[in-house]
Length: 46
Image (cartoon, rainbow, N blue to C red; front, side, top):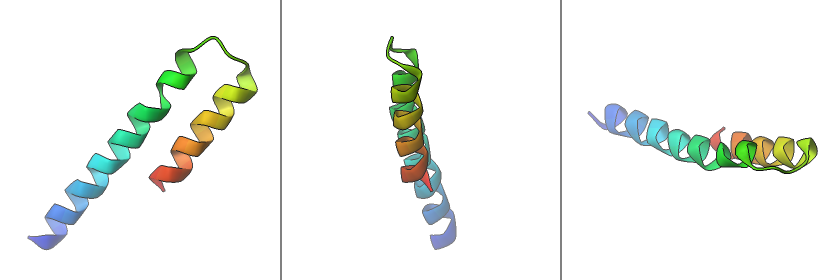
């Protein structure tokens, strides 16, 4: 029971950071800025 709640919470938190990092890819900025933003979002998920 506790493990299911913890796993759903981790999956939910990962989805939040995933959606938080995605809009930076759609902006018209440099490739390095996009890569930096995506790597920060990826690091927070792990």
